Amino acid sequence: MADLEEREGLAAEYVLGTLDAGERAVAERDMARDPGFADLVAGWERRLSPLVGVLLWKPLPTAPRYVTVFESEGPGPAFVASVDLAKGTISMRPISASAPAGKAYELWAVGGGRDKPQSLGVITADFRIPAERLGKTDSTILGETIFAVSLEPEGGSPTGQPTGPVMFTGKLNPTE
Amino acid sequence: MTAFSAAGDGQLLPLIARVATGDRTSFGRLYDLTVNRLFAVVRAILRRPDLAEEALQETFVRVWQKASLFEEGRSPAMTWLAAIARNQAIDLGRRAAERPGESLEGKEAAAAQTVLPEAELALELKRLRDCLSQLPEDRQEMVLLAYYQGWSGEELAAQFSRPVITGKTPRRRSLFALRECIDG
Image 1 (cartoon, rainbow over the protein chains, first blue to last red):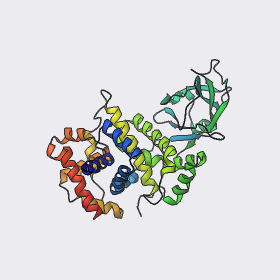
Image 2: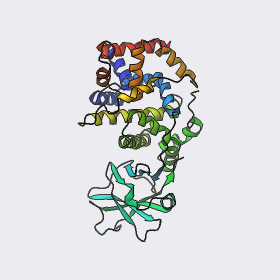
Image 3: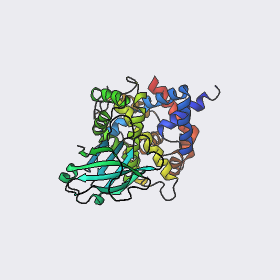
Image 4: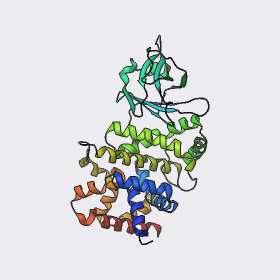
């Protein structure tokens, strides 16, 4: 109890954002296992949250962005992908879980004028590739392209074409 | 009611509730409705676009994982989402700063953003601003730089080079004074 003020101060600084990486990790661990501390943090989120409104009002970056959520039937991992033509990147993040041991998820572009599925690479935790890999990236072609994720041997398909089952598919939608 | 109605609770609450049950279609819709606003939040803290993009995706991973923990009524949904985005951005910024050559990037240009707008202030923001204005000016600036730019205690100390403001004890004293005022 003597360190109540210390805990309150730590909660305040966590929300304010002044802690270093190590202190933040400690605070996050404490939040997960100490409801009392989590309440302190929530109190500071509430006090300071009006400030975030200022950020939410700010003019938006205008880069054209295309996003998709990869869906599947039933439970299992899905992905969020985004294509940013202004920056010329495609990036992708698994939302949950990862490929079974010894297997890998590989991303393909299908349709949009392609004769065969085109490999965009094996999906890693911080998957990011140049958008030129897609070839022409005008909005019509992007809209007609289907993105598919197949389950492949570790390291990706040995043949350059999908060999395993297609687990997920998605199409890109422009945001605003 | 808060005035930042990028997307309101009316739209967001049902989506979050469905995301909590593992509904990916609702997740996609939630993503579409909020991605640009949340990108603005992470972009304010992370100037490097690649890091901002990474934080944004990490934000949605967290939203997917934590949707079932969202407590309706505690804060507006957009505030909850923005807090997740801020935390991801700060975490990522801290980790990136520990990689050599990536620290303190763009910090000089940042101070311009620390003035709160007069117009369109929501009631809570007005109250918070009134409370902030009771702090000495340099301490107000410290709070805003930390909140909006994600400056660490160390970075604040380097910028201000005045331990009387930026040390842990005075920083917490400022925060506690703020709490007294806000909680009334």
